[in-house]
Length: 167
Image (cartoon, rainbow, N blue to C red; front, side, top):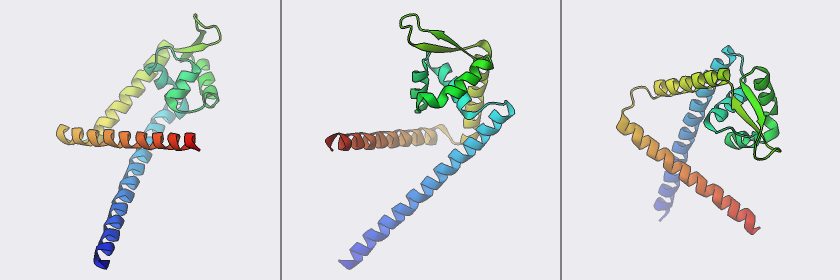
């Protein structure tokens, strides 16, 4: 019986070690991506937040500040400086919503669209480079595994919400 318990502990340790390695690899990939992207932005005199605000505006249809901050998963006040900078650089324009005068919406200028599209192209090209010669079959398997991880993590966040509501 002791042998089985030791084996289970050993297996648990082995799994923990694999998860630790996976976590370290994931962090390394994120750090490398961040370094590549920050270098790209520095050469163009943009901050990370400015670039994400532009990409969010490109993805969303005439978003409000609240829409952009939700897209970025941050508080609206944390993007104020970036929005003001983009307005002064003439990459973004602001206007009052025609249906609700309390809401301010944003739209990319032609210069803002140009930068956003070039930035999205840069991201796509570097994704392609980072995937190297991984064949489509392996890539599809990996994508399905990531989808499963997302579902698992989303269910954990739902469990956290349920626990908070019951307390």
